[in-house]
Image (cartoon, rainbow, N blue to C red; front, top):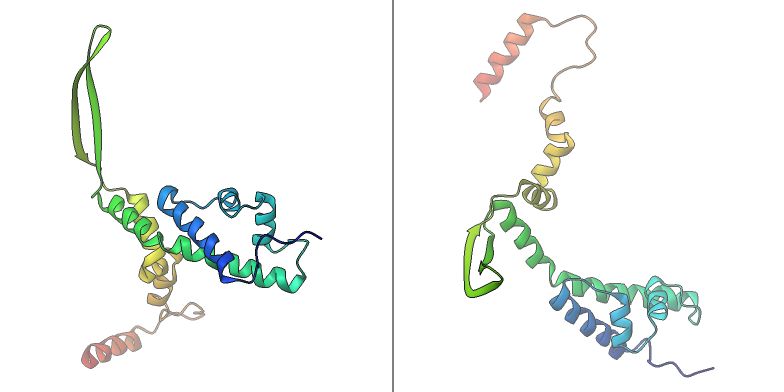
Length: 180
């Protein structure tokens, strides 16, 4: 049997994965298994099998432990960029993002060297704002799921078979006003 390229339980192996993942997140904001595999000198199918926990040369226990550790390393690399992404989503939602248009003057067949750069703010993006709120606001999630409305209406009886006694209702409302 061939000698493995790494000690798969060593910190060095996982450090190489982390370095490759960090570099990819800084450059592309996405992690590709095939690039990590190339960086650590493995076949992409081998690395994918290791990551998913079905590498045939490892035991079941080794697959579980090592794939969990690989996925944790990749999650930490993604987490380092996540705040920056959410900040950008919020800025788009609030309309604080600036766009830049570059135009060149064309006369006949020639493009002159003169270029005009126009900077303008983009309008608020409600979809981006809604996505940010859905992930960061408990109150927004309650409103969206209807739980907040259900809480507000929880004191209204729904299994009424005889009607409402107006006198008792007025007494209750008056006593509630005195307590407040």
